[in-house]
Each structure stands twice: as structure tokens, then as C-alpha cells.
Length: 96
Image 1 (tube, rainbow, N blue to C red):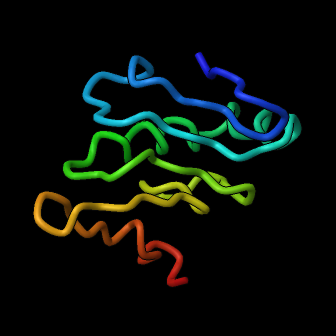
Image 2 (tube, rainbow, N blue to C red; image 1 turned 180 degrees about the horizontal axis):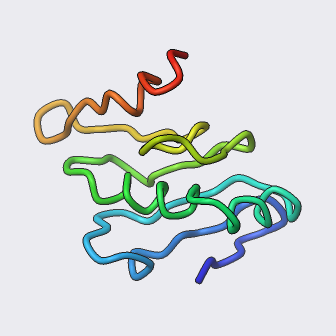
């Protein structure tokens, strides 16, 4: 289901999971994308894409790996008026 854009970028289309408001974008090499496909990181990127008020895509940086709800290495920007603040997105799960 991932769409490879180039050597290091993969799109998670809105069709990946019902309710996605934006696409996901994963920055990874072939080794990392293989690991991401084995755990819940991909699903977590898609889950974040369902949050209200996101500006742009749900992102996963090159250090991405499974978290408790929001992928470690995940990034999302939210509109000040229509968006939310996600405790998982600021590292409550591993206290970073």
C-alpha cells in the first residue's frame, strides 16, 4: 500500500485506513521501511493522520519505530483553532 516517491520517501495514502484526513509521509531507507512494515509504526502514522485539524501530512522521521500510540519519530502539525495537542505526540509514553 505504500507508494515509493524516491529512495528515501514513502507515502501512506489516505486509503490505507478509514478516517485518514491527510496522507502519511515516511522518511526511510529500504532497511528501515522493512522494519516499519513489521511492527505498528505504519499503522500509528495512519492513526495520527486521522486526528482533527492537521496541517500537512502525518510524518515519520528516519528514526521512526513503534510507540504506544504515536510512533516514536512521528511528527504532526496542528492548526491552532481546529487542531489538537496530542500527549503521545510530545513524548509522554517514554518521557522524552
